[in-house]
Structure formats: C-alpha cells, structure tokens
Image 1: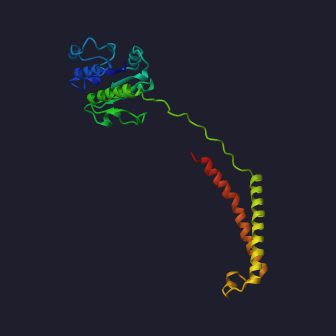
Image 2: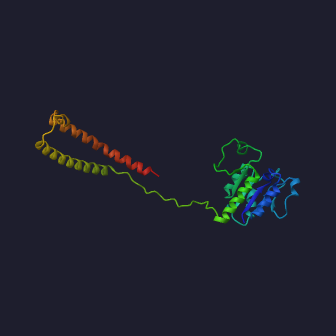
Image 3: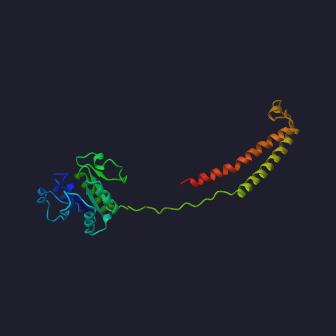
Amino acid sequence: MTQVLITAAALATDDDWPTRLQELLVGGLGPMVVGRLAEAAEGRLERSIPRLAAPETLPGASLSPELLVQALSQLPGSPSEAFLVCEDLNAHQQAESLGCRSILVLGDRSLDQALGPGEPGSKSIAIAPSLDEALRYVIEEHRQSELLGPFPYGPAHPVEERPNVSLPTASDLAKIFGLSVVAGVAVALGIAYLLQEVYQSVRFPRFFYYLTLQFIPQTLRGLMFLLLGAGAGLLLPRLLSGLVRQRRSYP
C-alpha cells in the first residue's frame, strides 16, 4: 500500500480535510498525519488513521527532519514508495533528499511566498494550489501505477560511453597531404594530355583563346596554377582537423 504522509499544517489549509483523508482510504492509500494538530482538530481525526505527533518542545505544527525520518522509518515500504504532502519548502527538500516524493501545498500563499526570496535547491518542485489538488494527484498516480505498474524513476537506458576519437597526428596529415598531391598531379597530367590532344585536333572559336588563358605566357600559367594548388593543399589539413574536432564534440 502506498503511504501518504501529510503534515498537520497542510491539513490546516483545508477545512474539509477529514473528507480528503477518507478519499485516500477509499483509493487504497494509507494516510499518516505527521506533526501537531490544533486542539480543535484532534477530535476530527479518525482513530484508524495513524499519526506521529511532534514533541511538545516543537512550536505549532512544524515538521523537523528528525520527525520526518522517524515517520518514514515506520512505513512498511521504502521511502520511494511514499508521498509527503506538506506546506513547508524545507520539509519538501528534506523529503526529496530521503527519496520520498513530495508535494508542496500553497494554500492561501503565492508561489513567491511559498518558495521564499532565495533560489530553490531543486528546479523540479511538485506544487499544488490546495490540499484537495495534491491528494487528487496522489490518488491518480496510485491508480495509474496499479494499472500500468510503478513508474521507473531510474534511468530508462544505460548511458553509452562515446568512443574516444583521437585527432590525426602531424605524420597522418603529412601522409594525407602527400597522397592528395600525388592524386591531384596524376589527374592534372591526365587532363593536360587530353586537352593537348583536343587543341591539336579541334578548331575552337576565338573566345577560347581568352578562356584558356593563352594570352599569359605558359611559364606564368604553370606557376599560377602551382601556387593555387599548393594553397589548396595547405588548407586541407586544417579542414580535416576541424572536421575531426566537430565529430568528436558532437553528442
């Protein structure tokens, strides 16, 4: 049976809290009241509902960490199978640290008043505007767990370690550059021999004289294309290194 710990202060936010506790019992849940009830509320609590009162030294209906640990120790299951419905942010955070799921009830307060001026330690705080809404959420989750089984709160899939991809060394880049130069020269020579054959056997229009840069001396043309090829070759290792780094940082 899923246990629901409810602080006395959270009960005080709803005048019809006995009906809310009865709804938990009807829904197959086991409520337990934690903290000190007001004298007027003592007679409204059914004897069948267990309670854990705060020591007399604690003022009002405050919930101390010791009292929360004591309440969780009295539950038949683990803390992860229990809920805590409270109105105090410290009690909420304490319950979460112990593995208990907790719901913070706002009551008549605004969200800023409930969370306080500081930054909350947790970004995933379950908040309900009223005690009725909080208990309805607990009942609905219990119903879904009965139908579909408990929700797996642990990681659904094991985290796969990414392979360690090492960057190419200077020697690797030199080999790549050398092979690229050899391949480029071979292709260029093949294209040059084919173009020479075409020039000698086919008559082209006049504008091909300018398109093929024949107005530039052949030596200068050779040097120009050598510089162009060398510049492109020097950019190749940087391009490969950038691609490897990007592949390594990709999730």
